[in-house]
Image (cartoon, rainbow, N blue to C red):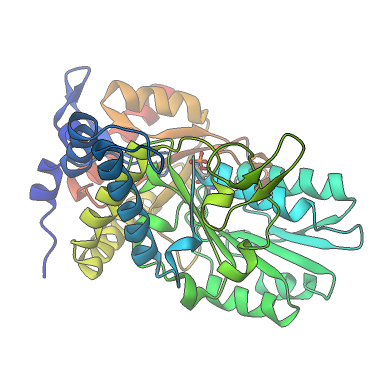
Length: 405
Ligand code: PMP
């Protein structure tokens, strides 16, 4: 089945707008994705017809809101193939999900323990573990990458030992587009009995994520990277790990019994979800996942590959352009430098032509240092981008090269 990008684009109102009189070419999808009408409708419908607090009201609106909110949890559980709906914990996003796990682990980590991350981490999955290790006196080990942005698997495996308590790694690198072989890496980590956390911020929107197949213990992602609103995210965690996990935020909803002097904790998922949740966000996320699931996964993956292949071919032929990140298995991202030009200037000139990209350190300062560069210009693609937009990017880059020469 072919992928009808034109009709897909019609479902995204924002893609119809102009920037400075030019059609918007949105190539900043690794930062956040745009939202289809189905998601916007779901949020408006919730606020228009059944806005109420969940789990506590003695009235119909609250019952309806609770039903939609808990149905949203089911939708996420199906989407990632969780073994049970209780394994889905709502968060505000990837960053909070990682911090939630770190909060639990920090109370379990010993000073003889080690946490392994990679050189390609986003700050969310580096700084969080760096600080957790500092607090516990544990060691943080950094698995190196090759110069093309692929993980050095041999070195990664060599870092694993009985002291490894946790391996935390990205499914897909936001800065380089590298896809990590997370199933195989998880199997390696399991040989030393380590917990495995996958930062799925960039992995979630590109096809099937099956957490049971990967074999990890935690998979975290943000709704806004997969066509859902900001402010909602998910921590999926294995029930037998999470049910004994130290609690996170304390307050309403997460308790069982409370006296003035003490409290006992409720069961999953509530014990890790204190306070009024982002109800509309959860409903919006479910709408996004349901919408995404209706698409032909194979066709959309082929489409994304076609976009990246075209971008790579044009980048290779482009004089003075240096690609950053050329891993064999790569999706969605073209990070690059133009000779003699600062990425910020490239981004500014592209913006004048309606083309939205990201410039800077990609929230990965140590990775930029490792690669010996100050940052990159990054074009990142989603399923609604077109080959014409890839061409528009390179037309604009030719202009930028002339202006900055
Ligand atoms: N990890 C990766 C790989 C990311 O790309 C991002 C978002 N740029 C994050 C973590 C953090 O996500 P959020 O800001 O939505 O919490």
